[in-house]
Image (tube, rainbow, N blue to C red; front, side, top):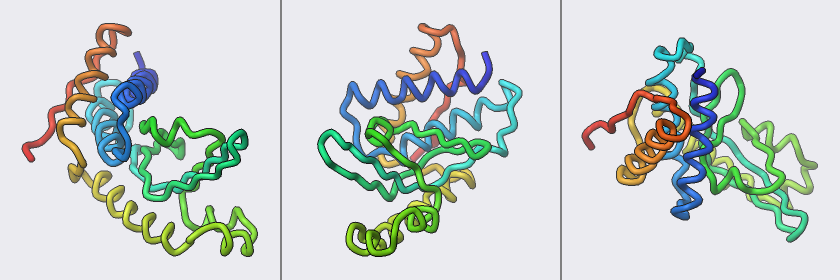
Length: 178
């Protein structure tokens, strides 16, 4: 099985685990696990690991049924060859979402009068910058998670389900001593 397929199945299983356990606010830990799994298994699957990076994003979702617009700044994703992989069920499950990779991309998507009226751009920028540091730390190999127990439980769930459901092995990841 190719790494792309194994990672795709891993992401689906991660979201399933998060939904079942009502996990929220754990994008750093989610991305840390996905990034670790991809980097750790890239060579095994004949994949170039230097193309895998963690990036902060701003996510805009529009629930037209309930007439609600939601903005998430301070969110991390894994990117490979400019493709966004979002392992966080909480954000991925939002309807009609658009991912913005930069503040500039986000602000240029709206008329300036709407921007001033609808969004606290300063807060969005500060949160995006804060998460840029987290993204750079993870990409440089620093291990940062919010909840070690959640990281380990989700890893066990994903790796066990991959093996039993898909006969697919990821090289197990062990967390560094914290």
